[in-house]
Length: 228
Ligand SMILES: C[S@@+](CC[C@H](N)C(=O)[O-])C[C@H]1O[C@@H](n2cnc3c(N)ncnc32)[C@H](O)[C@@H]1O
Image 1 (spheres, rainbow, N blue to C red):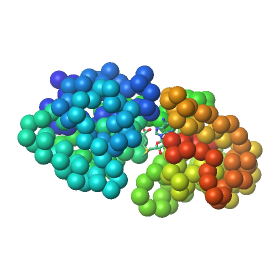
Image 2: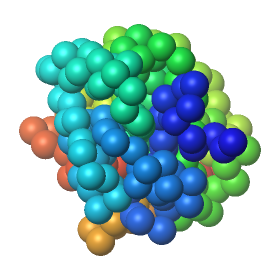
Image 3: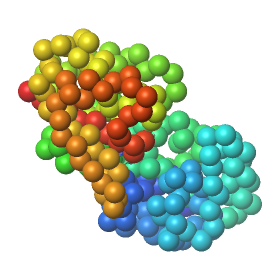
């Protein structure tokens, strides 16, 4: 028996940051063995070559699509759900929805984009404060923890696409800690994918571009602030 077998529980497989090298061996095996794989279209597209039958979700139709998945699993099909990166990092809402649709799930960790970002930035993962703003709500507690951590630690932050982008996070941090303007800020985009870009700047330069019409970065971005 392996974590990746769809036996009594439906595996929720973390597919990694997108590059095929970072999909685990067990995750790949689970996808290939599945009768049906459910996930957001943006996630399924990265693993399409390993999937025979997929149920695509969008933010608008995910409840109905997950119910459809649940019915097929209850009818005896082997079902697997997929999440970006590691489902244990900023993936809790999706995992909860899959659980609601199918009953028991087993989370199969993947390589998180936050790990890749820390690696590109040369930041030790266990010493950094890691926060996701990619959630419903205003993330008051997460923002407070980031402000509190900035003086002493490196930060690894998942932005909220198109609402709280890396420039906005830099501005917020500088409003609380103006003395941190010289800290190195690294924005990692499309990690492990052909379009991967790593932009190295300072918190002050990044914050100067906050609040404009459009961010310089894509929705697939992670901000790292190195420790001083
Ligand atoms: C809902 S969070 C899920 C994070 C995921 N569970 C993980 O562990 O990487 C989605 C966000 O992760 C970040 N992300 C995911 N894959 C990425 C990649 N390949 N490069 C850069 N950022 C990525 C982006 O900020 C994206 O908006």
